[in-house]
Image 1 (cartoon, rainbow, N blue to C red):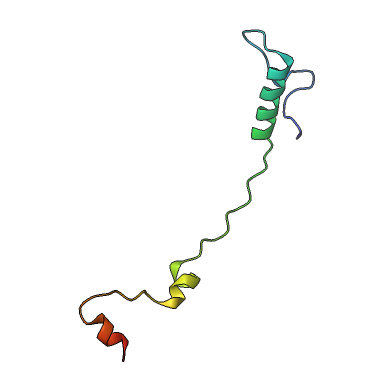
Image 2: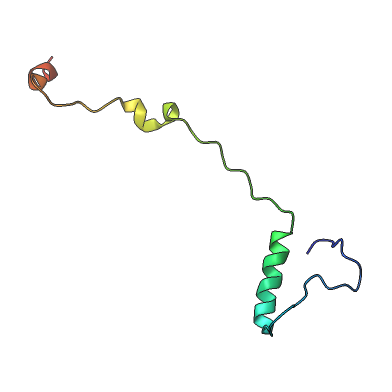
Length: 74
């Protein structure tokens, strides 16, 4: 855990209502500690544009139509 700006002897969390179990307190403490840890997620890698996609290097698929068979023999 990081260094707290709180005064020494002052609790970081205070239960206002209810009687949580030790497990529930552990979960809340872990979530609050993780949220305030100051660590950032690693940046996402840059997205590759479609011009760099290897699938586009093959060109477009032939489309069948009138005269397609005759034009494929040339």
